[in-house]
Amino acid sequence: MGSRSVYSSSLSERLSYGLYFLGQNFFYILVAMFIQVYFTDMGITASAVAIILLVTKIWDAVNDPIFGIIVDRTRFKKGRFMPWIRISLVFIAATTMFIFLMPISASPVAKIVWAIISYVLWDIAYTVCDVPIFALSTSMTDNMNERTAILSLGRFMGTIGSMAIVVLLPTIRPVLGWTATAAIITIAGFIFMIPLCFIGKERVKVRKQEKITYKQMIRYVKNNKYLLIFYLSYILIAFANSSQVVAIYFARDCLKDESMATIVSIFFVVPALIIALLIPSITRKIDKYHIYFWSIAGMGVFSIISYFVGYENLTAFYIFIALKGICIGGFTILLYMFTPDCVEYGTYMTNERAEGITFSIQTFTIKLMSAVTTAVAMLVLGWFGFKEGLNVVQSEATLHGEWVMFSLFPVIGVILGLPVLRMYKLRSKDVQIMAEYNQGNITKEQADQLLEGRYTK
Image: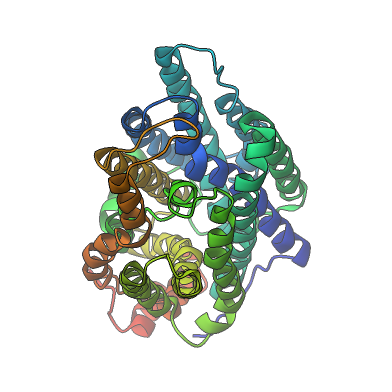
C-alpha cells in the first residue's frame, strides 16, 4: 500500500502552520520554562511555587478532556478546528500578560492568589489553541509522509521559537524587567500566529461525521491502547527531565553569569533544529519509533557522561551538551508525531473518530508533565537549601543540587520510561493503511489483509 494522497495542503498553508508554532512557542516557553524564575524573583518561595504549579493541574485534569469533548461534539460551518484556532489568538496573548503584571508591592498571599488565577486562565487559553492546532494536521492532508513533513515543519519552527526565547530572555530580562520582556514576546508571538487564521484549510473528510457520544468517546480511549502506552511512557520519562527548569539557576550560581544560560541553550537547541530538518528524510527510511526510542536512550547516556565530566572544563561541558542536544532534538521533534497515528488507530479499532479527545490527552499530558517536572525540580532544589530572591548567594549544597538537577536527574525518567515505550508496536506503514480504511478508500477486509492481523482485537 503506497502513501497515496487524496487531500494535500498548499505551501502557504504549511508555512503558516510552521509560523503558528513559532509564535505559540513564544508563549509556551515564556510560561512553561520561566514562570518559576519569575515567581521566585517576585518573592514567592520555591516550595510555594511547586505547590502553585501542582494545584493548577487539578483544574487542568478537568479542563483538557472537557475541551477535547467540546471539540469532538462541536460542528462549526467553517471547519472543526480552524474556528477554535482563531478564537484562541487574543485569549492566549491576554492571559500571558496577566501573569506578568503581578504587583511587586502585593502581599505574599496576594501574589500566590494572583499566580494561581493567572496561571489557570493561561492554561485554559493554551488548551484552546493547542488541541486544535495539532488536530488540524489530520484535516489538512491524508498522506502520512506529508503529515510528518507538516508536523516536522511545525516542530522546527516551534524549536526556533523556543530557542529565541531561551536565548534572548536571559539577556534582555535583566535590562528590561519581566513585564516589558513579556510584552515584547507576547506581541511577537501574536503576529506570527495570525497568518494561519486566514490561510489554514480543512479538507480531509472521514466516513463518520455525526456527533460522537460520551459513551463512544470512553470506548474510543479505552480501546486505543497505543495512545495510553505512549503517554504513560512519556510521563515516566518527562517527570525527571529537569535540565531546562534549573538552567537559569545553574547559570546564575554555578557558572556565575545568568547570560551563560543563553550559551548553554544554544548548544541544546541548535542540534535540535538540525534534527528537525532531517526528520522528514530520515523517517522515509527508518520508522520514527526507532529514532524516538534511541534518542531517549541517548539522552540518558549523555546525561550520565556529562555529570562525571563536570562543568569546570567548559569545552568538554559544551561538547556533551551538544551531543545530548541531538538526542533531545529527536525526542522533542518526534514526540508530537505519534498522536495523529493514534487517531487513525483508534478510528480503525472502534469505528469512531475523536481527534479532540485524543489531542486533549496529548496537550494535558505535556502541560501536566511540564508543571510536574518544574514542581519536582523546585521541591528538590528547596531540599538542597535554595533561597528565593534576586542576587542571593546560594550554599555549596545548593550549587551541587543545581548541577545534579541539570545533568544527572533526567536519567531516572529514561530508566523508567523506556521499558514501557517498548510495548508501543504501532508503525507508520500500518497507519497509512488504517487511514485508507478510515476514509472509506478500502474495505475493512482489505485493510485486515494488508495488516496481516497485527492489530486485531
